[in-house]
Image (cartoon, rainbow, N blue to C red; front, side, top):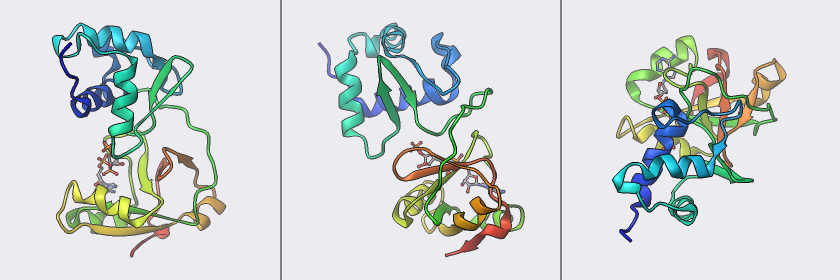
Length: 182
Ligand code: HQG
């Protein structure tokens, strides 16, 4: 059996479950779940993954720096990051009073003016801690801007927040009045 590269596997499964399930003949349910067995079967059609099994999925999740997926009752879903046309249904919950968003310097002025938009994804991605937000921003800029979101006021004024994983929070849109530079 050839060794599975769990990092490449994570990238492929992220792509399948967040962006293009139809390329794998998968259909997400409204909360983003698919059958784990169906996912494994479709992956095995690719010779890189011909021997992939459920244990590999667990190894992949253990080895990851972030909690990207959830497995339960024979199903798997991506916890955040989706761009599929049908919006994944999330249950609103109370966020921490302050959440953060790391972004590139070149985007900061526009965000402060018009708010945080989901752009290519379904939801705006926020972080409960500054470190995570900075890492997110560093994907786009070596010296990212750390934005602070007054989630407590936003929530009290009707903005909904949804849990992604234990550090990531999602929102539909964050108006500029709740955003400041940290
Ligand atoms: C920016 C990764 C101009 C926003 C990460 C960001 C995260 C605006 C970019 C997760 C804007 C969108 C998501 C506005 C937002 N004007 N720019 N009004 N509003 N932006 O990748 O939050 O490793 O879709 O600041 O770690 O960077 O894949 O969102 O720079 O958790 O698991 O538009 O994806 O997780 O970029 O990252 P993205 P994100 P994984």
